[in-house]
Image (cartoon, rainbow, N blue to C red; front, side):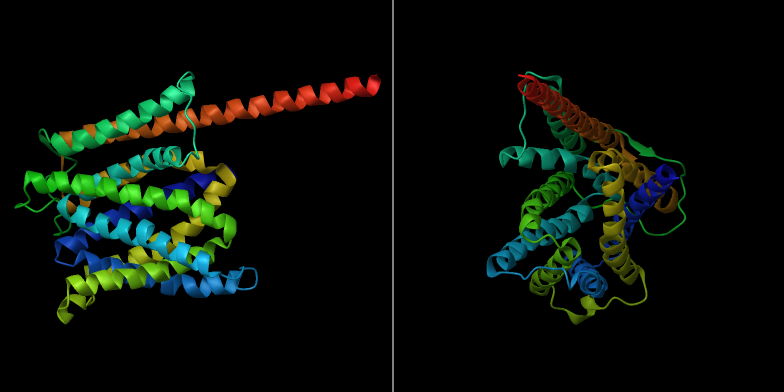
Length: 349
């Protein structure tokens, strides 16, 4: 029963993420300013999470020192504000399917950053170490394929779509803009990977996870407002209205940032982070099928091939990490048994 529940929740999580890519792209294509979108998204997330976090963790949360305050502010700036605002610009130049495809590079990027920070090690003499390096190489190859090779365009499922929002890149979008969008998406994922690596260290000093993410959303909303107001001062551009703009903001702020936080924590706690990471390609499948069926998105062969390489890189890194964990666990068990035998021999003597 628990196994089936975990699978259902994972499908729900990745469906929500697929909806995020689709609705975000739809909002940008009807003319919504990307920076204003990110501000509204983070503000709605902070408003949604604040009462929940205060109710659940106000009694157990440790006080925030000035150093922790500054660390959280900077973490929000780099890992959330910069990541999401760069992602918004990148999505405007590319497609929802591409955004979903590049999410498969996140575990690889996170591993590479952890390697730079000496939080991870690679032994090239083992299969696990070689698998990790192969994963990084496949990820780089996937990004390069998506950026520099388009090939023939593929119309998936239907020649006609249900809704009028066009999710593919604008017709006047040049090849240079597409390449720029791909590398901006990679930069966004790099900022997000950096957020994952550094947040682990901050949680050691401030372990209240829900309150920490709420504070980060609050800081990010302020930071995003500054960026948005510098870029766009026309009041009419800030009006949401009862349309796709309001729907996408509410969806990303409440469902993506709020609901999936709990769902992901539940899955990782019961099934492990590796199990959850292995299901990441589901987002790409859901997004590709939904964007083709609902919005008539046209996907190029280069994007499909690049996505396959990204998924391959993801699984190589995950396989290597899993192999190392099993090896380390076996070594620790053998060491424990050896110590137990030594203790028994000493007692006999």
